[in-house]
Image (cartoon, rainbow, N blue to C red; front, side, top):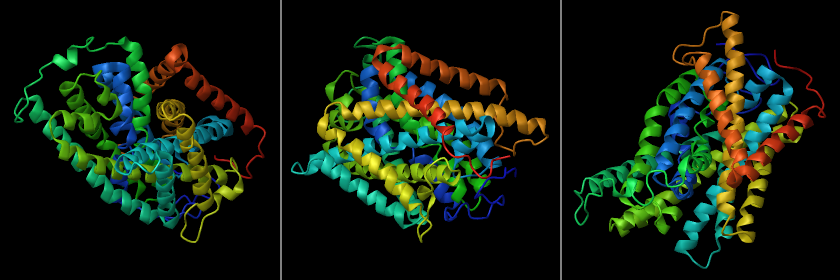
Length: 467
């Protein structure tokens, strides 16, 4: 295994990394890779995507999922060669220099407090539906406090919570798809087979053209964010190479079943422009089928699923901050760990920004959720561009030095497919800057990236540099 020297990182696979405990087993890693990407982005945020793209949401998610599969393959090559909690920031730093690791790490971190706020607001909305006397923002803040406590306990507590809740998520999605397919076939009592009426009617498959698909892909970017957490968790895994290989191999079928399968059921059974679909597509589908009791059960499961995703968001963002602090790209205080080997200050700092974002719900209750989804999706564009660029540079460097990728992790058709991903993601990001509906958030992400790159030159240089 190739591990490049860095401050605070032992090159052996079994050594603690910078004070973090290695408490995650392969079973934890597998469920983290599945569960990290199944949250409000799919269950609630996909409703906004359906409003933007209509049935074309399937094309938006198919294109995004293809990019995700390729990005994860790139990450597998990088993470197996260099298992590190800093993940993307480390790879960018090694490939391009400190400025890239600094900007890439901070941009990735920024996306997670936004995501945490998104899932907290979505979960709080469910609680408000059950208990109308409790405002959405109050419920959201309580839930943020709960996942904060879990993450402050230990990495093992985080892993165990994810392991069991993700099983629940998977079971519900599979059941939803199963019921939906029976209904699509006209085999569910009281329902008729819809055929292609909803798929091609009501303005056609692409009622808003490819512009709508591109907008929906921003939300899809956020929905898929979380798949990459497994490469961050590699820094606390007992056998990172084995865990990463297994997780990246299974991503194609996971994406196909959980995302494309469930969304296909929604757009086949309901008109895309039905109001309820845009608010809560899964619950609206079950209600349409007359399964009100199932819809109520789904709400409970959705609640658990989104709290689970919040758990992963606190984990991923705090580990990135910890790695940035270790490399002197963030205040040293953020790199301190508690007696349970949890990066306490990094966790609390992350949560503080998420709390501020949740409070936007009080000021702008009708627009806060969609705006946060868009902003979080734009930060993922920056991360994926960073990953693709770093993999091209480091992959060429390793192969030139005679270091072949470990079996089952090398990028396919290197470097041509890697370049294709870089160009496609870059073109998508430019398109978002050009389109009026997405311009503000996309330009904001670009400007923040440039500002962070500049700030990196003003910070004290690390005492040791990656080689």
